Length: 122
Image 1 (cartoon, rainbow, N blue to C red):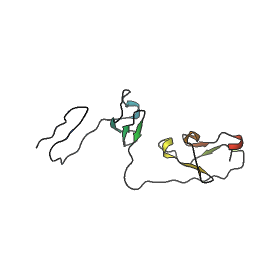
Image 2 (image 1 turned 180 degrees about the horizontal axis):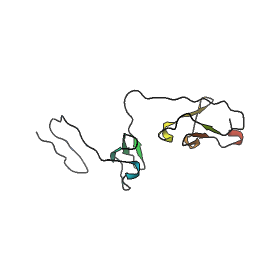
Image 3 (image 1 turned 90 degrees about the horizontal axis):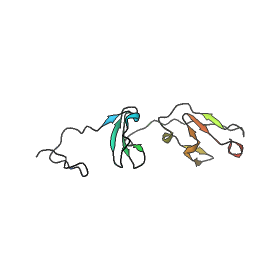
Image 4 (image 1 turned 180 degrees about the vertical axis):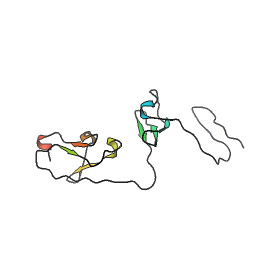
């Protein structure tokens, strides 16, 4: 059997396939402004496949092992900004826990963990 794509709304692939599928590729700056939910592309900045969730592009998780870097900080009651040892690819790549309680991602800025000060200082 041959291979074909039925239409742009519902795609069907027929027959035995031994090759691959090329998806659109480009940098984050080249993402389509009119992307809709399900739009899939390869991000050449991050070397990851990403899919549009209806609002933003999300990276599709890779299967297998990932590297984890753990930073630990001891607070002094007044310091509100802590610098990470690495700059992660995105703020979504960071998990922050204080006293074993997960902290909201609005605390993250590039390679910094920023607390709002006052009673939130560590």
